[in-house]
Length: 592
Figure 1 (cartoon, helix red, strand yellow):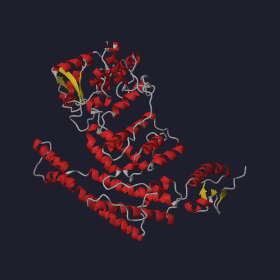
Figure 2: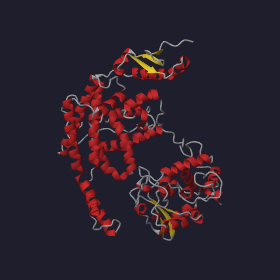
Figure 3: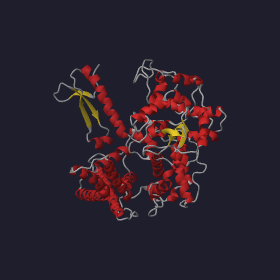
Figure 4: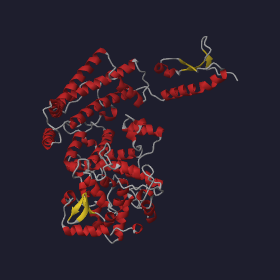
């Protein structure tokens, strides 16, 4: 069989090469009319084989580039505007992180308290004294340092723009080309033009930052190259102090205590997607029923965990949805869509109540979900029997072999968390974060105090989730108080010291993953209908079986209004006895 015409020797070389013609449209981008690539072999038969992956690689590259489009003026204008807004958003976030006078004073008091208590030795060593002083100085001077850094950056960008230097901004130009799939050759006049426009956007943003340093947040771009693209150009702009993010910050400050810090963090991400959809510089009047409706419809095509998927990195909300038509990642469920709507609902209600908008834009927008289709189910008696007779809860083969029978008794969090869960109904996160001090006697009764008090890392789902739950007598029979006493004797702050908070401050990440894997291994978890939360559903059923109404046992599951009892863990003896009686009504035949 003869060689294909694109497999040839080159010049006097004995080695065979692959020769490919570059499509005419792509020649300005690739910079060549044809490509020669050595196969590295001299035998014709071997050359045919070696050429296959080379041909496949370049053809795939040509195909990918062919899908790119020549940039329109609108594409470039939108990219420049996004860069301008991104620099300003970073500036806003940086200012929000700056320590306040109260925080600096608190830090001073904390250092003095640590010195007085002996936690931090205060000697004649100037290094120790200087370190403490520097901590306060850095906090105090942070705004000035940031202002100086921005001034240096502004001078540098202006100089680069004046001299035609683009090296420091090329990362942003490359990102635009990749994310928007534009057909722009690196180093070409079009590439340099894009870089210079991005530099002009950065200069405008840094000039706005200088104005903010003087207390003026109303500035707008003075460079004609930095302006919103057509989709937002016609929209009414926000008045000074009434930008969408400024209003949301005001809303959050007024409602800060209503939900956990983590919920605020998650909601800000979702709200950011909504603002991007309607235009982040838009007037608040852009939040209409039509805008919410259109966003809801767009969410039907929003990929699951889209912001964590590498293929979507740096893309806008709409670009991600468009790109996913090709990539094909699964989209979010109806429940998740409702959660996204819930994230903006409180803000929209606040806007309505404060007369920033004139209609209830959320009413009737939530998707109808069949509540009979319960997502998580309680474990059956057979499943509970499998769990609590399994090696982990009896004797196993040891660490990483918990699902196998053996002679090792595990008696740390892996043993106690499931047992406490089925005799309290508490959430996994509430149990994993328990401190040793949260287990104590009240009126002669041992209790779990589920609370946010005691550590800045602790959280509860709502204020009403803070509560007092008596320790079930079965847990005491199993030796839980002995375990607690051992932790107290070791002066452990955490009841389960092996559990460490993750990057978001949650103690539940490790046990959640562990039990998901363990329950699969022993055969009680085959889908999402059963997980650790199934214990909580089982406890609710146990209360109902004992004749208690949901309104009665809600206080033990954290489904009640916030009270000082929940926060401080102090309650009269009579109501506590009622709770003991209710907890003791939880019974499992398999445990007898």
